[in-house]
Image 1 (cartoon, one colour):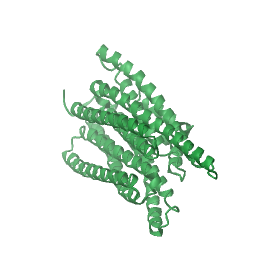
Image 2 (cartoon, each protein chain N blue to C red):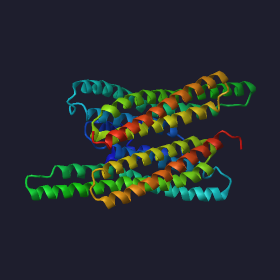
Image 3 (cartoon, each protein chain N blue to C red):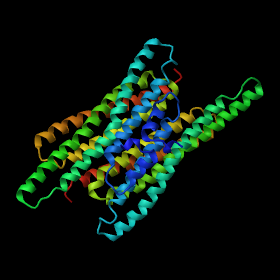
Image 4 (tube, rainbow over the protein chains, first blue to last red):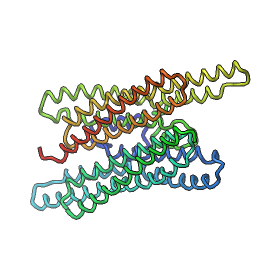
Length: 211
Length: 211
């Protein structure tokens, strides 16, 4: 399990001449880091804010952030596993016409499966950014730069995931699959980007005002 | 040492109710991940490209990426340590006028020191993005999405570092220190952002063309 490695070892594995873990797993890790920072800001707000309704709201946000963090962390491995299946499919024999057809079908199936992980990552990034909107508005003022970095990590993870979806789609021949996925990721990407900009603007406003 | 922790444990520590590690250390880790992916793309290009001058160039780029990765990884701890010194300074006694003055001076010194780490992070992000420009142009076409995620990680690390510099500057009273740092980070931030956009555009162009 990649997340069981030390940070140093994970970095060494990434930097090595093996293509996995690569950009997909790194994007999932960036999202995990974003969710972790979001949870930290919740924890440093709960109990330090006299407004009981804010406390309750951030307790519920914290539970959701921790669930998302667990999902993001599992995607670190899932992305690498899906990528390995594509490599395995390419290594299938292609000596006969039948083998060649089976190999082509296996490659197509593997690319479709490899698309599922970054699409899920994108969807979960959209869920996290919705929570960061609340955190940016109601989180402890002393931890707003941490909330800001959380937004940056989710934003980068979302862009990385979209990049990985597109690179898989470029190898897929099923046009309706391509079209459906393109529409979905464009919508999610623009949702996350717009929200990220709004939250960063609001964080900046709260951080450098005396209100 | 934070980078010696498992990825899971690092995430748990980040998510905990202790303010460190926070956004500063996470930004340094994001930069480490970006440098690691940059190194991977170099390794997957060297030996697979028949152009000997590209091989030589990317071997030299790889050495620089690995040095940057080591520096980024050391900044994960350095940021947390610098932050802890600020907390320690705030905990100094302030019962007498003399103690109070000493405490104020210690807080100011600690904030200045805490500014050094993200400024260095920003400078190193600018160095890395210059290398990613070469990688995006000459790297193995099959690994361009990894180079793209590297750019995203360096971009997010740069924005996170700038956020951390600004939050420290807001607590510093030395106006010439503030001014010098503000000019520096604005220049570095715009350098990194502009280059990141250009590289991502070029990667997209290479990835989805048949040339």
